[in-house]
Length: 281
Image 1 (cartoon, one colour):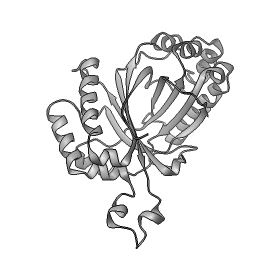
Image 2: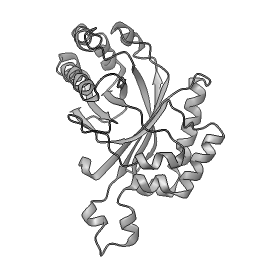
Image 3: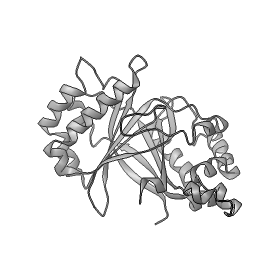
Image 4: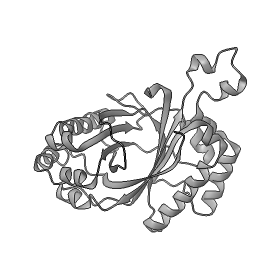
């Protein structure tokens, strides 16, 4: 499937200090379960998942000189996109024209809006400043065919207020490209994706403005200036082999945690288990 045929959306939630990680995960999972049952979601979505942080990579994170990861939960969805020349054809049925962007249709659906409101009231969802909901174009840098379960590692970079966003992105991408060229990553990665929520045109990936105008109506804050990367592994052994690789550690020390231009001041790196809530295939 071409990336022009779908739209990805990410929901990054940092767990509030007032809530335990387990409680927040359970409540967010309950919310996604309800979203997965909505007809508008089932009509427009390809997949809906949540990623639950675990400690499988914590020791490696510490060995790389990175901060202890903040508790976080990641939601991910992929939506169908109808080509504009088809969706807005004068001969198209009005319903088809409205479905050109399935993600927007969900966000405007009365049942979904009601569900969000109820989820906020009962604590299943929080529209707080430590969350970011955004659509994004995704760059896939490694993609190996694999069937079966996968292990995941996320890297979430927050762009500092005092650093030009373009410069920070270039540094992050150079760091990641250098890591992906190493033998340990080449041998163990199944897939590596990158996405950015920045509002300008970055180098090779970009945040889209598809849903920015929809967020205030739902009571969600504006998207945070975060860059999100995700690596997939066939099994835990592959993940841990990368985590103990000395060449990778040296590369990160030279590019990620360097004093000259540190990228790790506000970064969260963690392993996660994926839980599928809906899949149209």
